[in-house]
Length: 479
Image 1 (cartoon, rainbow, N blue to C red):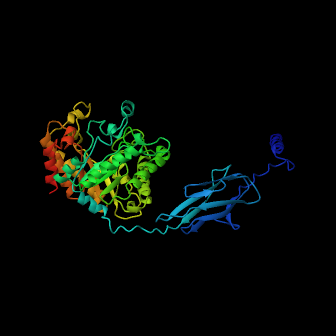
Image 2 (cartoon, one colour; image 1 turned 180 degrees about the vertical axis):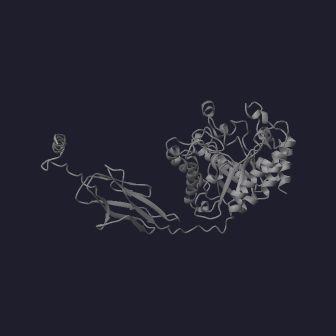
Image 3 (cartoon, one colour; image 1 turned 90 degrees about the horizontal axis):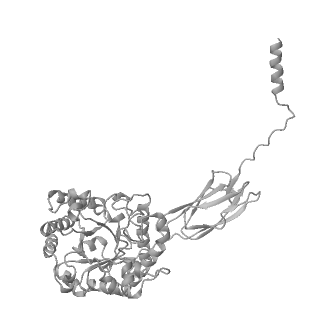
């Protein structure tokens, strides 16, 4: 009995007195997005500009954020209050042909939870330009027949040129071993049967670092060479070349994109305005071989690179189209990441105000140990090839068939903007490779552009074919 009494006394002593104060419960968080006194979670709008009035009612400090740049908020934070805080959301007119959606998020400062307001805006009423007088991109690719790159010319660049020459257009044009281009060279290619010339141009050393304005003398020389091609009766592709690549400022990286996209758009605005009045024989190519932050070829080594590459392409198309005139329907060329055939599913064709005026470009130097001098490479040297055998032929045909499956069969015209091979004293075998590319591509209406060769160095001035065997192989393959 004594033991039981002790237990009862102990329990009684540990119990709380009814008079002990109890902690006050924390107030429940209350935060709402209101319009005209009613809580809302979505708003549907037409395509016009809108100034939406909403109210934030919250018993705690709060923040307000958005996920797109086509709306603005006149307040992004507030204090706890029993009175609602008025906020204006400005929605710009939708000038695209797509429905678009924005999310505005209200969050208490003391919580990770939040509430959202979805703003959905109808597609804009886009009046598409009349392209009845312009050939479609697919027809242009066929009419080009076969092409050549005026390489190591207007694409030449390097700080040493600025440091050790007067920096004239001719100094840059000849810096990599080629002569000043003459119109007679373009006539020679046209008379032989070539239908198009790709004119690679590097721009960064000719742009004001602050305003991005292109030097007038450089722009004039670029236009002069473009006219050489067009006056010879061929198509001309004008591009942004070594502004990409291992030394370029255009990098397939989302952070870099955010820093340089205005420079990129300003450059293309100037090119588009200068060449606006030219007809459909002039095509623009947005960029050459864009690489990620680690200069990785074929496939990027970091995430976000494909998204950045696709974003540059969209900016290119938007800027050119916005310049009006003939550029509204000009055929434009957009490249894959690194101009590679790898992971083509990650490439996104830009949206366009016009239809059937976009062309996809890739580059292909296959097989790699045949096309390049790998004799001193630690890994590739054991695979070095100078004979274009059946395995080589199979690799080239497979690559081109992949382009057909991915693009051409889906109604997207395609060109191989560069192909070629290093001279290993095997011109007959290199001619076989060229013929294989051109003949296989012709089956699918894909135009191929030989990278240099054919006429190089002083032969360009003297109007001599440096590689007549390869020239003949190309021209016979398109018959």
